[in-house]
Length: 88
Image (cartoon, rainbow, N blue to C red; front, side):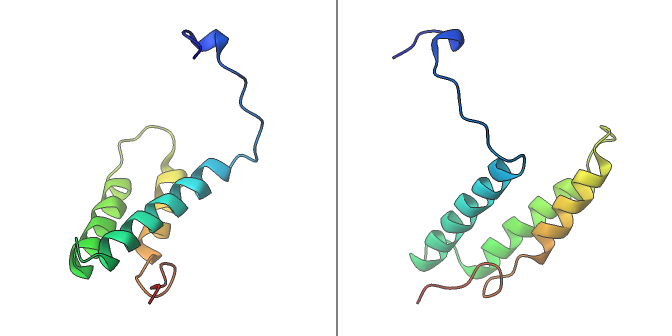
């Protein structure tokens, strides 16, 4: 196991949005799993999504306003049964 950052193998280059798409897929899978296993009810999952959208809506003025607005719109658009289809 490399002990320093300089010893770590270089990560291959990926398209700029690939990390975000991968993160979204992982989060969707986690939320679906929590719902399917009845760990969290649907209302709680929708609350999580609403909180995440609100966090981007009320972002600090950090120079990435359009990014935050786009993220808030995307999160607000996620609904169980639409972007997050149930696996039953």
